[in-house]
Length: 165
Image (cartoon, rainbow, N blue to C red; front, side, top):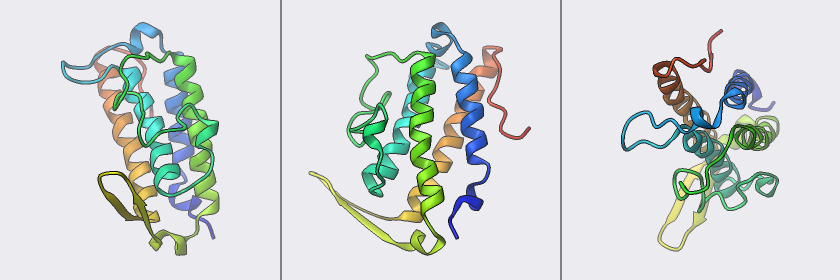
C-alpha cells in the first residue's frame, strides 16, 4: 500500500494553486506583501523548487531534470535567485512538473519506507533525516506558502487558492 491516501488532498491543493497562479498577471505576481518579503512569483517558485530539493536532492527521487530546477539544492527562486523574474505560465509549468515528482513519491513510497533513514553529505554539513520527514515537510511547506500567498492575495483583493471548498 502506498502513501497516497495519507495525502489525498495534495493533488487538489496543487491544481487549485496552479490555476490561481496561471490566471495572475505579471504585475500581480510582482506584489511584495510587506517590506522584506519576496514578491509573490518568488514565493511560488520557491514552493515548487523546494519539492525538488527535498524529494530529489535529499530523498533521491528521479525527475529533477524534467523540471526548471535541476540543481534545486543550490539554486531556487527566492532563496538564491531574485533576479530572474518568473511569469504565470512559467510558474504554472513549474508547479505541474514538480508535482509529477510528488505524484511519483505518493504512488511509489509505502508506509514501511517512511522510517528509512537517509543521509546526504554536503561540503559544510551532513544531512540526516527520514523519508517520512521529507514528505511531511514537503506537504507542510506547500500549505504554509499557499497560506502566505492567500494572505497577500486577500489584501490585494485577488482570488484565493481555495483549499477547503
